[in-house]
Image (cartoon, rainbow, N blue to C red):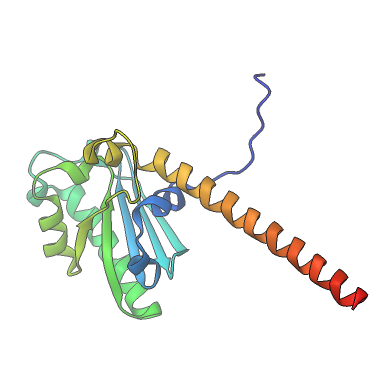
Length: 178
């Protein structure tokens, strides 16, 4: 009713990747592990492209205070471990698991995941953020920032393609006159 139309639909894992994956991550195999309040998204990326996606119907609300002994948390870890092993077998070496979402702020989460997943786990860091926003706020707004980065990258790529088309057409016209 406001006169706006949907231009694109973007999966949250792709939006998060747009702001969290660095150049090194885009050259390797990584998993983006987003542990939200009610579900966990496991997005695997190969050379910066979404390769596989799994949704685990467990989130931070399902876990108790002591993550080490929580049965739901252990079930989630087993599922993520299976996905990581499958990726390693199918695509080669898994470089790292990048953690985002509300549970990533809990003390000891990264260490516990590293211990149980047998892979390098690190906190996702929003990249190339300018302005008056703290690191903590940027982590809380990862998907929103990722959507902006995704849209910017897409518009920049389209502008570059149009520029190349114009160059190609002008080059052909010059060739015809020559």
